[in-house]
Image 1 (cartoon, rainbow, N blue to C red):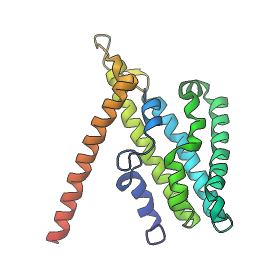
Image 2 (image 1 turned 30 degrees about the vertical axis):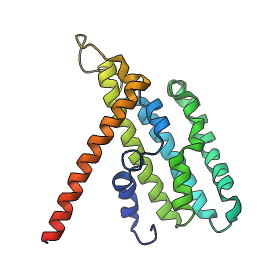
Image 3 (image 1 turned 180 degrees about the horizontal axis):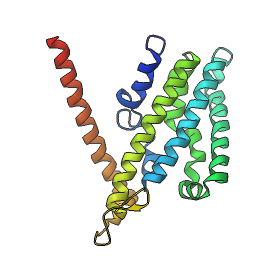
Image 4 (image 1 turned 60 degrees about the vertical axis):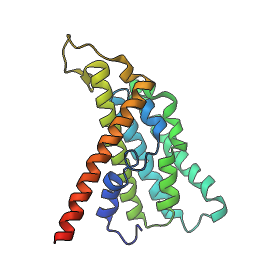
Length: 211
């Protein structure tokens, strides 16, 4: 698939058509855990994008040298290397984010999005296409986390990225930043986004038929 598409097509595919959160519904655990605020969502998204990009490139470079029988363990070794790097960088330069995300940073190693892209794309395509796939999927993941984090933070705290936007009279619904509220809001946002995407796709298809 990647070899038949342009790099731009591969990139856009990860952001829109196969968005890992809203279209493929992967990585739900970190989505619910890391989106208690927009800042946390952004931090987790950037960390995952770094790992996606790095692991996709390395795995693509080594795809002809990794024996098929040990490809999954090999992929995990590569992914864990990048996760260790990003974990150390966050701990050193953004300790508050490191404390907020906690165990979910090292758990990026077993994030199904990253392992799935390594197995389904990077292990079968060129370095440039794999890099585009990693960036597209990472950006799609990051944007989804920011959107969900913003909604939860606004409802739960009346703020966005830590800035109070609804004033002192706003009565926050704390359940929004708790696990049950996160699950409910994720489902609602997922339904709304997919409804919008479906309508856009139908309009595009209709225009194509008329043309």
